[in-house]
Each structure stands twice: as structure tokens, then as C-alpha cells.
Length: 81
Image: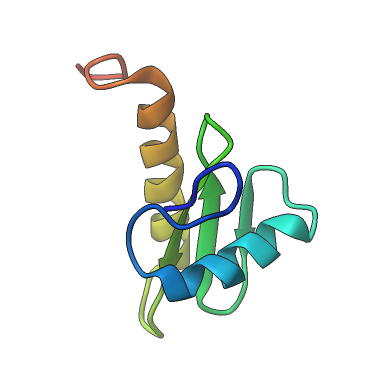
């Protein structure tokens, strides 16, 4: 996880520069490269994951978007709660 300034706040700090670079390339909400998926959080930070060769990219991106949405609404505010 990155804070709004792009500094790592949780997880592998070594992934932070790659995630920040992807977001700086002009992606407003979500960015990807061959193995990294990044989604912005409502506060301007980001969640980044390193995906393996057998990851289901569409499912991973969906889950990241759901996490970002949950951060925006808070627990218990989303659909089905």
C-alpha cells in the first residue's frame, strides 16, 4: 500500500517504486504491467499487488477495485451488507 505521496505504508517496500511509476504514466484509477496491478484508493494512495504467471488478471483487478471501493464506503456500507 502506498500513501498519497507514493511512500510505502504496508507490504513490500520494494514494490512501491514500480507501482508509483505505473501511476505516474498517466493512469488515473488503475494501472498494470506484466506482473504488477495497481489501483488508487479514495484518499489518493494506492494498493499494488505483484501477480504470478498463473494469476487470473481480470479477477485480480476486480478484487482490487472492490477493495478500493470498500475503503471509500467503509465496512458494512457496500452491497450485500
